[in-house]
Image (tube, rainbow, N blue to C red):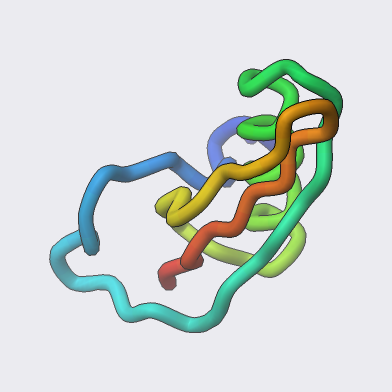
Length: 70
């Protein structure tokens, strides 16, 4: 079984049958995709099944936060 089978999935709303278990944050350059990847990696490290990005700010270095669900 590959690691990809356990990767947290980005969602747009609270997934049915999952509970909010915390929040995570990350910083990236000016690339939104890079920020999404960093948040996904942190969600995986926390054992989350999914995550929902709740904020992205910053003109030069992006900062994002996300809610994680299990």
